[in-house]
Image (cartoon, rainbow, N blue to C red; front, side):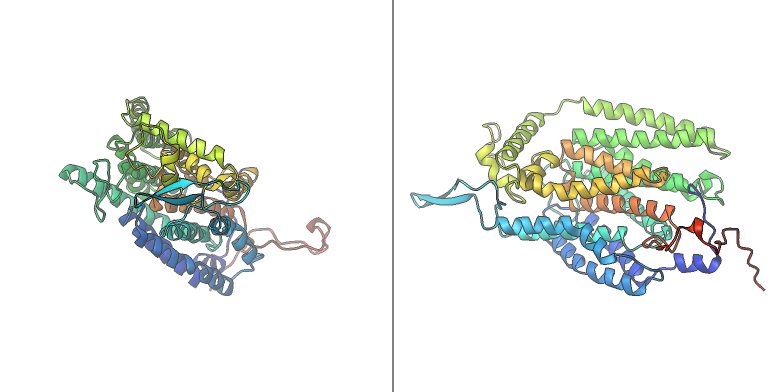
Length: 485
């Protein structure tokens, strides 16, 4: 194993790795929700957002069941739950308070209603409301809370060793369907009418969203492939499950050559190239696999090809570049006009006619082609702070501690690639991408916690009256020699 093994007796190991009712329910919830968000990947599917809201309501029940059925002591369970979920509640609270201050007013000319912007107090929340905005706000919060349970409930790495293969398989099957879709020259994605354009892949109406989805899961597949090489009973890599993970990652990463969106395709290919390079170095430096040279050379060769493809896509001429630049400029101006609280969730498309230049007028644009800028324009600095503080705290906490846990590092690399993609495109507009990102992020950090702590000290720490060095009764730290008759 990649981390130092702490001796666990067979009875303790069985207790640790057997699912509790809360873990079993969370397993089914995450698996079913991931499949649902992948099959119905339309960002504007209110059926899917409604499903997320229903599932999100069950999260409190899962935590309560976890408290009642967990075999070990848990310290501050509900404190951790409310602190971790606070970004979702604060965004909902900010949106609710902003309903009292709508920047739009109507006036009538020749029996036609028109909208105009009125002066608002920039020191208070603002919300541009529609009849569907509430569903979006609650759906986003539910996505976060459901995935957040992965940082609270699982008590052993066995949970992730069982669920991640299924989630990777879900992504690979979607990729295979996408290849068949391109081969059959279908005119629209499955289960949705699409956008009327040809830039779609699998179930995703916009292939830029697919690129972010493939980036996350291709990185996870390679991370799982590398994990299999560190098990003590690992056989030949070609004959192990690691080769299947690598095949799945290749199917996902190679879709970057088919994606029309320039920056998402480039970032997918470059990230996948980096992961292949990590794989190649691993086999050259520390592996005793009989086929290590051929695996390393093939990985390095394909890494060079995908990196070259990514660089080519990054410098490719993009006919949409001017419109994308104008949309980002409009989002930046919106942010400067209301930097603290923004204009409210999902307000960009409604405010755009007041900020757009002449090249954008007459066309409808829902996104600013940059999730980072659009989020700042819609919820402002105050709305972004809770999420940024939480992510920064959890990440710094991991890197300040034992930061040499390879699976966590590789999964976080995929998350970093998705965040970079959010600077140039709109990956988090897709519920499937948002949910996948949060699953991978929380799973990676929980894996690190489970790897560095004893089985009964993951969520609690013993409080010693005196330091163990001053105790008169020593601890027994030697290896157990149990014999079964």
